Amino acid sequence: MCNSLLLIDKPVGFSSFQIVRILKKRYKKVGHAGTLDPFASGLLIILLNKATKQFENIQQWDKEYTGEISLGFSTDTYDITGSREKPINIGDVRTTLPALKRIAQGFVGKIEQTPPRFSALKQDGRRLYQLSRQNKQVKMKARAVSIKSFEIDDVDLPLVKFKSTVGKGVYIRSLAHDLGNALGCGATLLSLRRVRIGTYRVSEAMKLGDIMEPTQC
Image 1 (cartoon, rainbow, N blue to C red):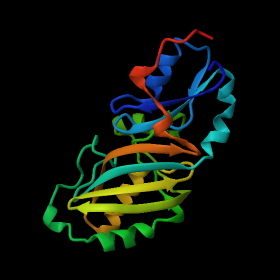
Image 2 (image 1 turned 180 degrees about the vertical axis):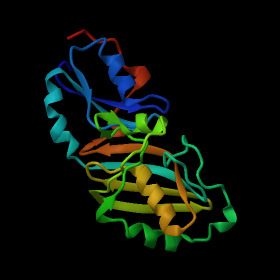
Image 3 (image 1 turned 30 degrees about the horizontal axis):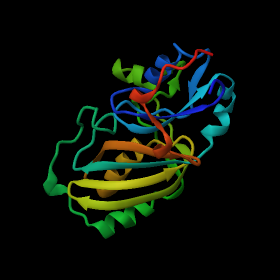
Image 4 (image 1 turned 90 degrees about the vertical axis):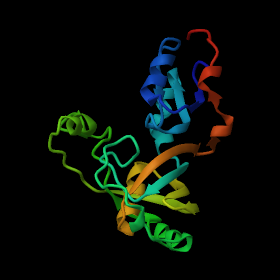
């Protein structure tokens, strides 16, 4: 346990850093391999002590998500926690499940994706979300990423349920936002759950409340 990977099913409302901070009271060295936003839940891999050396390797593993998107409006964060930039107008949302599946397939493969300006990426040594909150100018650059799959499971307008497997550096928030742009009606990520990283699944993970007080090491 002292030099291993700890799988945690992160609940909604906690940041990845908060989970790390809790565990730092018990272990000498703690890190995580893949940030989850506070509004998202699911698999968080915690690296304990010498296992932190595996960070770069784990970062390369595919990640699988499930979630729900709302069509008809967009926000500045690309998710439900942000400020609305386009008002809800359900009458403008005209699509079908086959059409959505077809459009979603257009994002699969090697694509250029622009991260949200409210993100932990850095510009001039500062986090983009810090600059955005201060209304500072943020330079967003598209990056080459890999979308392994983007499947629309169900549609009950304006709600869309999906699952997606992605490579390193992909923002599911941006994927939802870009889907809305392709439809011409806007879209916002309502919920997100990470169900797999590499061969590890959230079904194997511990609930945060089930973490027992281990021997410090």
